[in-house]
Image 1 (spheres, protein in one colour):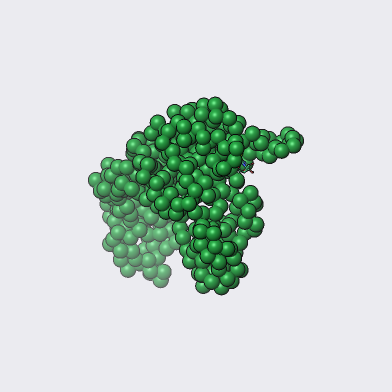
Image 2: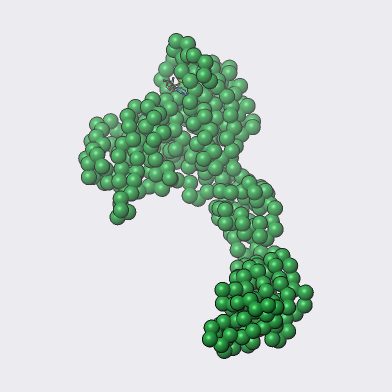
Length: 402
Ligand code: AMP
Ligand code: MG
């Protein structure tokens, strides 16, 4: 057996960041920026009002109060998206709506709540200083400023900034296209009654979904039978059309574990026995420059293997420096016993946080590698190093899926 870290290092050695590509801004959420974005325009592009109210000259409001209001004639109304018909003259007011350009000649906005209508006039009940409620041009982003830098993970706000600047495309590291296939003669799809010995394929949908959730582009390579010819054909299609390929099943010690046989025949693949439970067997290598992960078939094993090897490796391929899940120290709410076997155990757990912010953790159910329900209800994995496990109240390290 080899240590987890050694197996992870072997995988990461062979993964290179994908070349950046110009991508529609609308599709760039969660991708990593590969350019410096400079603002071609100021944002906001013009001085505008932050409030619904009246554009005035501050000096015309001096001394105004509830007791001694000042009246000004209202000479125009400016909606957002329109401009004043003429400059504001001394002693005048213009009705103005949030986002509308401040008219020339005005230097303050008095909010509508501090005014009262009086026929064609407005009555001001407060004095306002110059600049009041005015958002100057460039107040958010000044023209020419370098605002976003390579390595930034684009979130909804970044996409909004790019949209504000009129950008349609942005240069980002590509999402890897990740092909997923299931292998196994026992596997079928859909609702038809199962024949003796059959089970339904769950890994493919799970792994495709994990790929999607991690920010990759999932590609369904189908359900493949246990023979070398079909497996090799699917594999070749996969490496010809994807940036990475993931298989499930057929990498253990069974008589019909043909994935291992094909991979070791067609390229330079390593078959590893990793000192972890679940997910001990892993085949990894590069075929035609495309990394291929041969994950074990047990449903939980395939998910844990994806978590520990494929997810971090493939996130690095899309330039994400936050490739790994967050880890916390948590208090075990129940004992998590195990026996020494030379492996690190990853137990499916529910992580919660108590009122003081302390993470707490309990098992989410049965821990057999076929027991997918406890993976479905888990929001993390507890790491139990080789040994006897932990007692209730002990500190345990957890990987959080959230
Ligand atoms: P294998 O790694 O091919 O020896 O499979 C190990 C176990 O996982 C067996 O019980 C298989 O029936 C099961 N298994 C393999 N592939 C899948 C799959 N795609 N969906 C559900 N169970 C699977
Ligand atoms: Mg199999």
